[in-house]
Structure formats: structure tokens, C-alpha cells
Length: 175
Image (cartoon, rainbow, N blue to C red):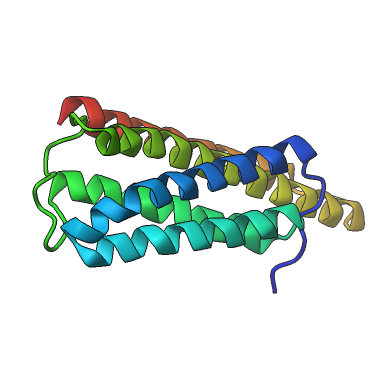
């Protein structure tokens, strides 16, 4: 069962809502052209908007499922964009290797990448805070709380974020 997020600053919620809605709106703007190129991609772009709106509602209501849904929407779009540029998607191979194109839609893709990556980083931060809050509660119940486990979790998540950012930078600039 996914419980409400506790001890999350309201600025984080506002940031999460803003980022996920911005990602959804970018996909709304770009959807018509993608319906022409490959219909299923246009459908995915429309689904992205609907998922982003649902995630924003969950985040607004301070529900952890909103953050997880937002991470799935933003992370999925991020991964599919990278795949579309590296190996292509079925019926949509013309953008392979075109990281920065010459049209507004191509520039929106890069902007979307930045917004989605920012949301994923914020999601990791929020989930880390949530895990920390739960660990703190567990520590208060226990006489000897394991601080090393908390530190290990933070280091693991920070390492994952650094690897993700490094990988995206490598793909964008060195491929």
C-alpha cells in the first residue's frame, strides 16, 4: 500500500507539479506532428499528458503514488527519447543520431529531456526524504537505530543520480 508522503516541503510539491505538467504540455504541443509520423507515438504523447496530469493530482494531494506515477511518465519519456535517438523506434527511425535538430519540435525534445531529468532527480530526493522520515520513525521506536543504513541509502541514491546524469551527458555530447 502506498502511503501519503510525510515531511516533504511544499516547495518540493510545487516543483514536482510544475515539472510534470510542463513535461505533459510539451508532449501535448508535439503530439499532432507525431500522429502524422507514427500514430502510436502520437498516442503515447497524449497518454504522457494524461499521466502527467494524474501524477500532478497525486502530488498535490501529497500521495506517494503521484510521485511514482510522475517518475514513470517522465522516466519513460526520457528513456524513449534516448532510444529514439540511439536506435530508433518502429516506424520512426528518421531521428536516429539527431540529438539537436533544426525544428521547434526537436528543440522541445531537448527541453523536455531537461525537465524530465529534473523531475526524476526531484523524485529521488523526495523518496529519499520519505525513506529518511520512515527510518527516523523506526529509529525512535528502537533504542539503537542503524544510522549506517540511512547513510548507505543516501549514498546509493546519490550514486545512481550521478550515473544517470553522467550517462545522459555522455549520450548527448560524446556519441
